[in-house]
Amino acid sequence: MEHYSEQMELLIAELSKLPGIGSKSAQRLAFHLISQPKEDVERLAGTMVSARENIRYCRQCCSLTDRELCGVCSDPARDQKTIMVVETTRDMIAYEKTGKYKGVYHVLHGAISPMLGIGPDDIRLKELIERLKGDVNEVIIATNSTLEGETTAMYISKLIKPAGIKVTRIASGVPVGGDLEYTDEVTLLRALEGRVDM
Ligand code: ZN
Image (cartoon, rainbow, N blue to C red; front, side):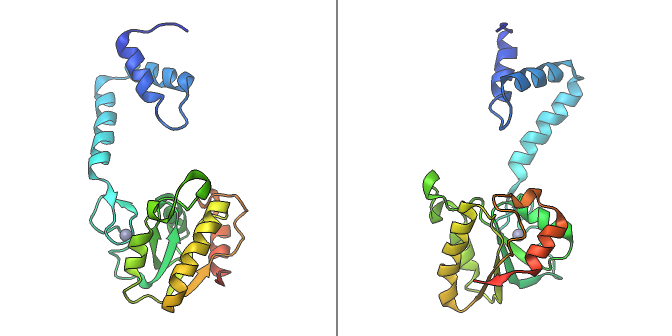
């Protein structure tokens, strides 16, 4: 492998820490960056720092937002008594894109995985349980149909059913092992409409 200057090596090393960026891609990105006008690179770096500083978890649903309460939670038109539980903010956005769901969300930021050592305390479950002390009609569990997603759905269902809250699971129109994020809107809506009691 060729040896670059110290600065270039440093840049390549930092870029290759990003997910999905191998050393080849990191080199390509590094060369691209240093060939760009200084202002463009400053704007990119500034945007990254500012996003990191200002984006936080919504006080209510734990989605990523730059406000105290996210756009969905603060919308008076949304049904606050119906909570859809998803694994990631990206899943939430996938459902938002359908424009048909009128309830609110709860973002777990992961799923229970005994194999990876991820337990209930490692995802945002406590926050969900806290929310359920309020007035809630239905919890729709929309975790992925992976082993982890199903394990999480079962766990949540067992946890909240004794409280007398209706718990439903989205239909398995979503392909097994498929991430919600990549599922098209029609399939998402069909899965939501065909949800079943747990
Ligand atoms: Zn929110």
